[in-house]
Image (cartoon, rainbow, N blue to C red):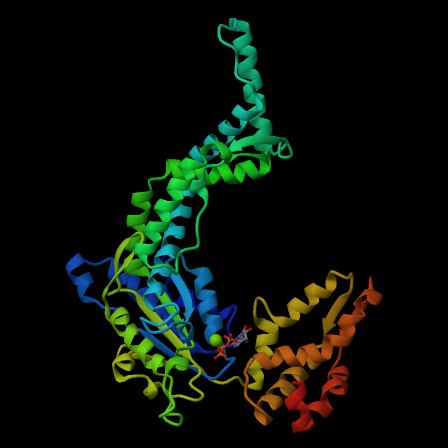
Length: 442
Ligand SMILES: Nc1ncnc2c1ncn2[C@@H]1O[C@H](COP(=O)(O)OP(=O)(O)OP(=O)(O)O)[C@@H](O)[C@H]1O
Ligand SMILES: [Mg+2]
């Protein structure tokens, strides 16, 4: 992945408005990893990633930034909620499991790449297997002309299978039980190994029962898995995945403020929060974690933490953990103008979503510019007067405006409906002016 910082920011700009400094810091951190990988190995080992802590009140785009990064990047990337983990020794997921999740993510990236590179081989394998089932084999000692005929038949059958013409035909397939993959990312590696050998044993016991009738269409999917298992070298996939997770892996640690201990509530604090923080230390600092696929060193994994820190402050994290997130970025709270831009300029804006949804009913929905301005203004005012919930306010405001029309949309088939400033005011003015009302409704 070698986008320049500028390109990364440009990409994020399509989805997240404002928040320049956060975008810049993250883009730079990503580029630094690319730069590091171009250096000598000695120097590479010296250069540690600088972990980032994003601070910003609720609904200003923290999670959104990470979601977009995850989609864009082809490096191993996972987003986890810090509040999901429990201290080692207690029931629940321990923090090391996030490293295992990262490795699983890396495996799927490498596998997809290798499958792409071996696409032709895999395609051939699948088609051949299916044709074998559809055509009875040529009897022994057939004459030359029979053989020629058969060859032609074979080729035309291959084409028909490939084109999808035979997709509805039913064939019998031996499904090897090894294909069944368990979701075992939460298991410690020792347990995962046990489970793996179990499934191998069962696979051999059940051999005969494994014949299954499936459509050619489904067979294509099943055989693809089998082909990639047979044709790709699993150990080299694992090694490459581990290497990438180690050097390029990024873990986005959302809701980190939820494991901080706030002073106000001290005394009656949940001790396991501090435990989770302590468990995080070695992982963030760099340690070895064993996974089903091999041992991984976490020295160079980049951590980006984010939190609203409404109740607690970054200084409520244990000092050792604070020190491991040297880069701090603050996200600004959203102004009226930003809210307007979020409505009009983002790729996946809420307005576009509503227009698309109602177009299914054959109705054309339009928004006057003045109406959009009014929506932004009212949303902003509601944020100021009650709680500031950032861009999430737009959801509730729009829902209020559009609920009625959305309900009767079928009556507007073939017609256009325009949301005007007057309509927005009519629906919302009273509610926004009245604090008590807006607490409940917006
Ligand atoms: N700056 C922004 N630009 C575009 N959309 C935004 C922006 N900020 C928030 N949104 C939208 O608002 C919604 C909530 O944002 P997000 O999930 O990023 O909040 P958050 O900062 O993670 O808040 P929390 O602390 O509550 O988790 C999302 O649908 C997102 O698209
Ligand atoms: Mg969030």
